[in-house]
Length: 200
Image 1: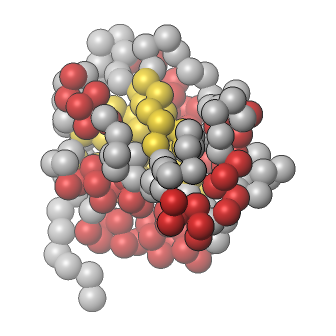
Image 2 (image 1 turned 135 degrees about the vertical axis):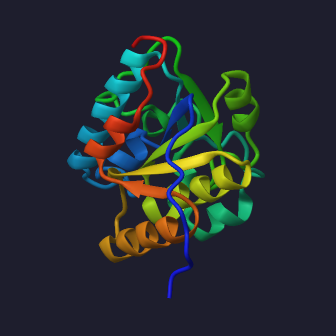
């Protein structure tokens, strides 16, 4: 039985956090990748809305600069070794427009917060809540959502803007995030929740 919980929605200044929407995860030609046109389309709509409103946008990528970084994680998932500096796989998917004011955070583990300066960057931008999207629902998205809550951000997940290689894992993790850590909402509802922002 799920715990009693409340939807909290967004604060006055949400940021859009696109987790690992890079070619290594969006291109099925990469062993880590999956074909996800619906996820791309939903992220395009959210990007347009955040850019129009002048609200903060943060992309993450995964890059390994030395064999010592995330040693055990890479032993478990050897395909991660493809994510090297200069590799096309670490670049943001070209279908997602990266604006001049957008932020790119490099990470080495699942969470966008672990071992990065993401929290400091968000605080400098005055962010009080997060819309989390990206890949994969059961992995890096979930880890980032949990850590977002643990840093005291209200977190909202756009249902259509996250994806997973395993549909059963996708649905189970959406259910669990909704039960404990975040508001999981449809894209149309989420777009209606966004504040006017600086460009409104």
